[in-house]
Length: 371
Image (cartoon, rainbow, N blue to C red; front, side, top):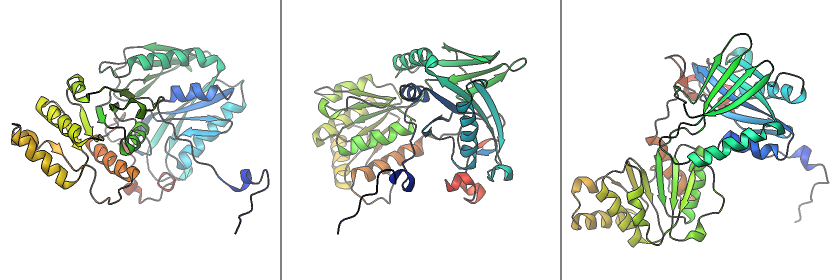
């Protein structure tokens, strides 16, 4: 039985499209967007009070085609998009506006919090500083002491952008109000993230890196002796490395690094685990494999002279329990979930009572929960 193809033009009216995620930093995404569009608006959460869907620093871009990224979905995002489209349509309007939104009945949400937004229109005239910021971010990649900051000062109807190395705010963004309509937004462009070294670029390794890169919670170093398996173009925050003997690279990992070992070679897996454990500076070490493989590795590590307490730091098998699928994507999800459990993300806010959005707090009935 053949399925008839829709007539030209019908698909655009009867089918939807995937929402576009914001992978990497908004600056890189804005540069790419402005290569195809003349104007866009970026929307950034600058502060929150109480319960809200996203944390300070969460951003999305709005252009003539739609949105890229999310600030939490639901009516909050719908209203922010409406405000952004007003900026898109009127080039004579001021390039910056702010919004203070209560997530209550008027907005059709019951989170009970309050969100402050910065909306800024960007055009091709902004490409020079965007390119400079992107270059500086690439140069700072992987530096533990990086403190790169973007200052956006709006005054007298114009915005001046400057890069600094002096950000020390309690959250990734901080908006200050000056005299009159003067506003200054400070943003950390290279927030400190824990180091994660992944050994192995097979099917599971590639699925795991793709997943973790979108989460943007780790500074990832991705290692495999088979250079042809490391993609040429990688997301922001992922640094590839290839050498014949990956064990020689372990000594270069910063103290406190998390390690995931999942190479194509059990002998290499063992050597990596032994070197990492012997160094005894890892925050966490996970090894992919079966229960029997884990038992054999632990017995051999003890025979090779490692202390029982040291060997006990090896986590294997890895991944949250309860996932039986052997598909690479499923295994990657289980491992990513286990890593996420270790990273207690508690975004600070301007008042002590602030908290990240908790679906159970609103019974799953608010617009954000349903989106």
